[in-house]
Length: 248
Picture 1 (cartoon, one colour):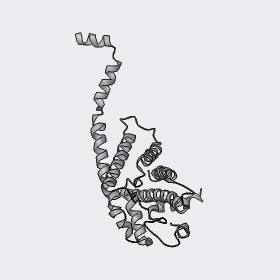
Picture 2 (tube, one colour):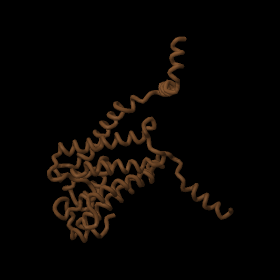
Picture 3 (cartoon, helix red, strand yellow):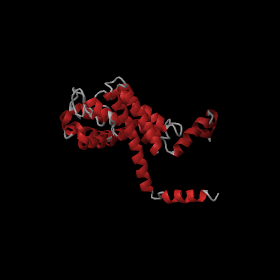
Picture 4 (cartoon, helix red, strand yellow):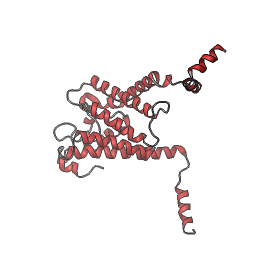
């Protein structure tokens, strides 16, 4: 027992008691895990010429990484140099900027890309609110991250072809800033007709739209507790008893 005392003291010394700091640390680690696993899958597919991955593996890994990141929070390798020959480009057959941030398909306009991200994020928020709504069907406790991962996979497989599916400003802006200072240069902001602002602004609009949609069409119409009790009582009361009560 004496040997355990120093360990307890060290643990207590390292423990952070400020709630905000603890939340920030957990969020930092969760986002790190999310980006590391997601971009690792993209890097593997891009730098191998899609011989060791494709759009499905990228979408699948991105979805599963969200699941892992949620549970957690609740580097660029030499392959890039071998693949590009040291020429870090944003466009072209050997581009690698899309490993880190999203870029639109050649046919996608800014307006359609904005709509794509608004709808995608709105669907994400509607799904999240439904998953977390205990007054709705609900999800067994502890399985929420798994279902969220499946939700994101579904969105990716149905809407990801246009520009990927950032759906979150933190997923796109931070990595884009990294590529700007790490050698890809200012083209990361000018490519795709100045695409960079769409994954930042559109998800904010989509999240607002998705929240309003779920609240107005589902959440606001849940019966209050007294109404729920009355409905249950009405269902359990025999019809003959109701008739008798009405006569009295």
